[in-house]
Image (tube, rainbow, N blue to C red; front, side):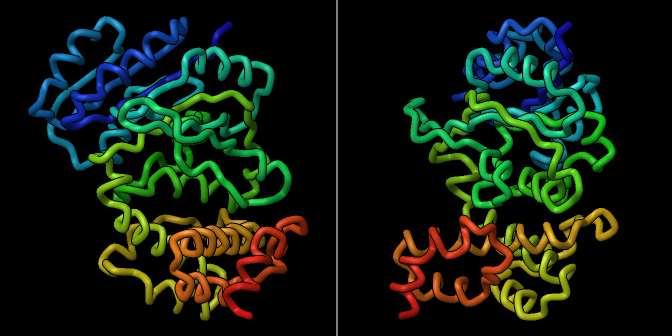
Length: 318
């Protein structure tokens, strides 16, 4: 028996990529697929493309909405599957992904997140890299975590209990979902396959390319709230100073009563490490130093503790 898999594609004026996205889903030939498209009232050829494939689509609408997160939630309202994911209108599913996912789910019931490798491609479909989303988590590290959602499929009942997608977030709604899981007892309910399931397209018009610092601002707001929950005044002040748009500070929803604070501390410390890597690789050494000064290395797992940062630290603060 094939589990029902619900997929929502939020879309707005992405006709250049939309047909390829749709084909990557319907050409899975998965027998228990529930596919939904929520278009935000596109003025390009998106509606014509959707109509071309409407026999494969359970529900679609083209009308003004309040952005990507709102569109995804509108789609979730139509979903009845065992598993759920959204595939953006310029991203792709890897061929065979849904059958691989179904096998993983059938053989491993009871998990809340089923994940695979994420492939990054460019506008010409050239492969940039493959990342294994959850291998580090299984080893007790939050070094590389599955933030981009293209290869992450959620138990739909769990997602509904979690409150669905935070509509106040426009860039980091997927990160918030993953952070909620990792900073709770549910972090042990993640399972993965080594197969590629989804493809993230890095293209010039995507939000990931044009709004990168809006992404960063939402992340800094999340980190600020983490530090507040932990009662860490030093980190609260550090991230408060990095927030550009303070009017957005109430947009982050992180339930204190469901949080495992040891895991939250670990998550925040690993996020600091990620930014050390980023700024170091960009040659912004002073900024990298400022992040290093905030790290509590005792929160990292033993194999990560100093090992991958040792050279950077020696070069930056010696």
